[in-house]
Image (cartoon, rainbow over all chains, first blue to last red):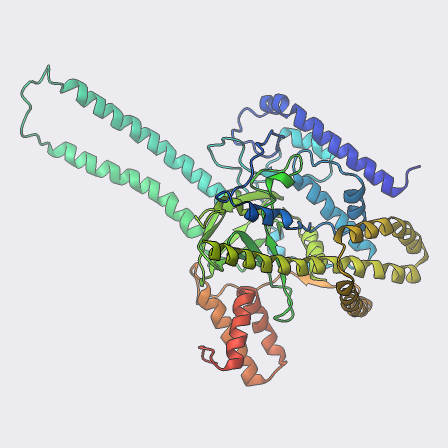
Length: 394
Length: 175
């Protein structure tokens, strides 16, 4: 008979081995199963990352600063079982780290029940009634749901990906649909204009027309090529304006406010909804994990030491500002990009529709290490979010 | 160039020290949970068995964490004292409530500030709170709402700076 700790460890090893098998079979099985989806970036496969030092003009002492920092994990202090497993078993994160974090959060939830500090979350009932069709479950995931109870997909760009990442918010889905609509018109217009141009080049070449005609005018063609482009532009503008005005923030009251403060070269996040005084604050810095400290399966230039944890299926307000120079807070899967200006608070609203880990980067040149200040958002269930806040606030 | 490098190194060192405090903050919940375990043991017997099973693996984890962190002894003593106080308070709160509620609510959207720029929104909420305090006195229950609103919207550094300006009498807002 196994004691619960050993049973948990065995389950952990089994799940990790299953993830390892899946990562091995991904290139063969998944590509056959999912021919239609071109942006398959849910399951990360391990890749040989180039081992290059992060150099700031050859200044080694500056890079040594990054090495000196101790990367405190949010999940080390929460949950005794989590601490034990991370201390005893050094199992690499095969697959993606989002899975590990979600399992740790479930551990936190379990431990919080034992300690009788379960938090009663009062979610908005209107939000729970929203039915969404965006929760995409690929075919392999349905098979894996029977084996692995909790899985969090990693939304990051595949190597050399050209198109959009998978959408996680209605705004990003709207942006992708608008792009497809406009691209249809763009291709049609491009083909037509190319045809007219080539036809003119062919039929009016110098052999057939040695003397060019001086005066050419046609009233009918003038009217036609004025009215038709206007109609086309109207067909492009109507969905574009509809999407633009649907992004307005004022419609829905948010449930959570997160403040993202840009620094050179890291992000600071503040959750101040749970404060009872000005001194008390749930704030943390989010630094990139250097390449030397990456574990197997972690993404280069994208992982951070402290992630932003938000509940899924909840209206969020993100207030973005900066403390020194201009930055830009951009997460492609959420369809979010907002400048961080010192002395100004910019607000964006978002509604994440599926749980997962979403990666972004600073998108405004902000100095030497502009490429080394990533953004990682982990969307969890409302219950797990309550457990996380309880562990952080206390 | 050398001077700028020195300045950067100093600022980075300061940031490093600030992060040490954060790590200290992270350590507190573990201690709180450890202390709470015997209370549960006193309350129920089957829970006592579970806590006994849990306490045995906890010790090596704590030992490993202490070995990893290796703080100086002076800081250890101060942290223990502060953590003791926190433990007592949290114990009392747990005894009173037993299920702390975390309500997912924040400052509502204001139709006076419908655009992306929310700088004036933050400032206005702060001024409203202090007007309410001036009108109804400290600790008025009606003013707690405004306090929550401006804390949700304003960054901590801004609030600290405005508090200093209010104390010095140089705050530019209409209080």
